[in-house]
Image 1 (tube, rainbow, N blue to C red):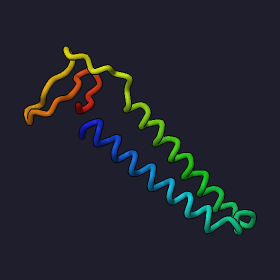
Image 2 (image 1 turned 180 degrees about the vertical axis):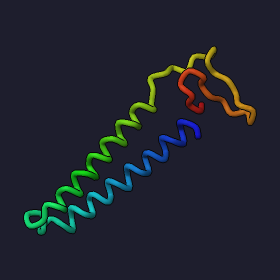
Image 3 (image 1 turned 60 degrees about the vertical axis):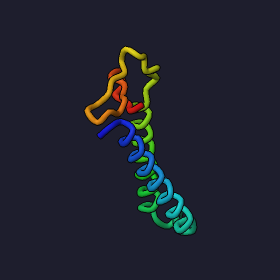
Image 4 (image 1 turned 90 degrees about the vertical axis):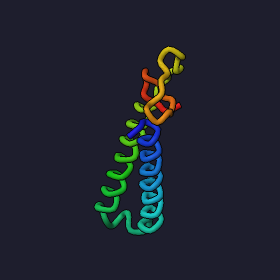
Length: 87
Protein backbone atom coordinates (compact mmCIF):
# COMPACT_ATOMS: atom_id res chain seq x y z
CA UNK A 1 0.00 0.00 0.00
CA UNK A 2 1.35 3.39 -0.90
CA UNK A 3 1.35 6.35 1.46
CA UNK A 4 -1.17 8.11 -0.76
CA UNK A 5 -3.65 5.23 -0.40
CA UNK A 6 -3.09 5.09 3.35
CA UNK A 7 -3.86 8.82 3.63
CA UNK A 8 -7.07 8.35 1.59
CA UNK A 9 -8.16 5.50 3.86
CA UNK A 10 -7.43 7.57 6.98
CA UNK A 11 -9.38 10.53 5.55
CA UNK A 12 -12.36 8.25 4.87
CA UNK A 13 -12.16 6.71 8.35
CA UNK A 14 -11.90 10.12 10.04
CA UNK A 15 -14.92 11.41 8.09
CA UNK A 16 -16.97 8.32 9.01
CA UNK A 17 -16.13 8.74 12.70
CA UNK A 18 -16.93 12.48 12.64
CA UNK A 19 -20.29 11.84 10.98
CA UNK A 20 -21.04 9.16 13.58
CA UNK A 21 -20.16 11.55 16.39
CA UNK A 22 -22.46 14.25 14.98
CA UNK A 23 -25.29 11.76 14.60
CA UNK A 24 -24.89 10.51 18.18
CA UNK A 25 -24.67 14.04 19.55
CA UNK A 26 -27.89 15.00 17.75
CA UNK A 27 -29.75 11.91 18.96
CA UNK A 28 -28.46 11.90 22.52
CA UNK A 29 -28.49 15.59 23.47
CA UNK A 30 -31.56 15.20 25.70
CA UNK A 31 -30.31 12.01 27.32
CA UNK A 32 -26.78 13.21 28.05
CA UNK A 33 -27.51 14.10 31.66
CA UNK A 34 -29.18 10.77 32.35
CA UNK A 35 -26.63 8.39 30.84
CA UNK A 36 -22.90 8.54 31.43
CA UNK A 37 -22.44 5.75 28.86
CA UNK A 38 -23.38 8.11 26.02
CA UNK A 39 -20.79 10.63 27.13
CA UNK A 40 -18.20 7.87 27.45
CA UNK A 41 -18.90 6.58 23.93
CA UNK A 42 -18.68 10.07 22.45
CA UNK A 43 -15.41 10.76 24.25
CA UNK A 44 -13.96 7.45 23.04
CA UNK A 45 -14.87 8.28 19.43
CA UNK A 46 -13.37 11.76 19.77
CA UNK A 47 -10.14 10.20 21.06
CA UNK A 48 -10.10 7.78 18.13
CA UNK A 49 -10.52 10.67 15.67
CA UNK A 50 -7.70 12.59 17.35
CA UNK A 51 -5.43 9.53 17.12
CA UNK A 52 -6.27 9.00 13.44
CA UNK A 53 -5.53 12.65 12.69
CA UNK A 54 -2.17 12.32 14.47
CA UNK A 55 -1.32 9.26 12.37
CA UNK A 56 -2.31 11.16 9.22
CA UNK A 57 -0.04 14.07 10.16
CA UNK A 58 2.86 11.66 10.61
CA UNK A 59 2.33 10.25 7.11
CA UNK A 60 2.40 13.66 5.46
CA UNK A 61 5.98 14.87 5.37
CA UNK A 62 7.64 18.16 4.46
CA UNK A 63 9.69 16.41 1.79
CA UNK A 64 10.53 18.56 -1.25
CA UNK A 65 10.96 15.41 -3.41
CA UNK A 66 14.44 16.26 -4.75
CA UNK A 67 15.16 15.00 -8.26
CA UNK A 68 17.93 12.68 -7.06
CA UNK A 69 15.41 10.92 -4.76
CA UNK A 70 12.75 10.36 -7.43
CA UNK A 71 12.44 6.95 -9.04
CA UNK A 72 9.94 4.85 -10.99
CA UNK A 73 8.44 1.54 -9.94
CA UNK A 74 8.21 -1.38 -12.38
CA UNK A 75 4.79 -0.14 -13.53
CA UNK A 76 6.29 3.26 -14.43
CA UNK A 77 4.78 5.33 -11.61
CA UNK A 78 7.05 7.99 -10.13
CA UNK A 79 7.60 8.05 -6.38
CA UNK A 80 9.94 9.71 -3.90
CA UNK A 81 12.45 7.35 -2.32
CA UNK A 82 12.89 9.81 0.55
CA UNK A 83 9.28 9.86 1.80
CA UNK A 84 7.74 7.02 -0.28
CA UNK A 85 4.98 9.30 -1.61
CA UNK A 86 3.60 8.74 -5.11
CA UNK A 87 4.27 11.72 -7.35
